[in-house]
Length: 55
Image 1 (spheres, one colour):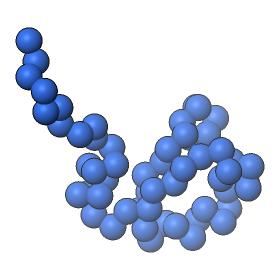
Image 2 (cartoon, rainbow, N blue to C red; image 1 turned 180 degrees about the vertical axis):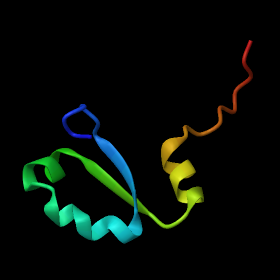
Image 3 (cartoon, rainbow, N blue to C red; image 1 turned 90 degrees about the vertical axis):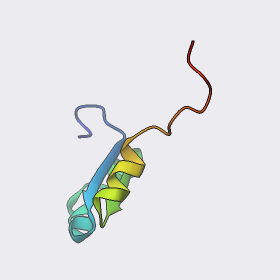
């Protein structure tokens, strides 16, 4: 993900420990979002709904 230029990664909570294998400089450059449910994934991955009318 880092090599591809991504800055945010969503991963299962059960894989949080795997972050220990990621070099510190990569961890510092990225934001990791451990999640427990698909609802959490959607909240992080999707933009909020727009409330203004679209013309």
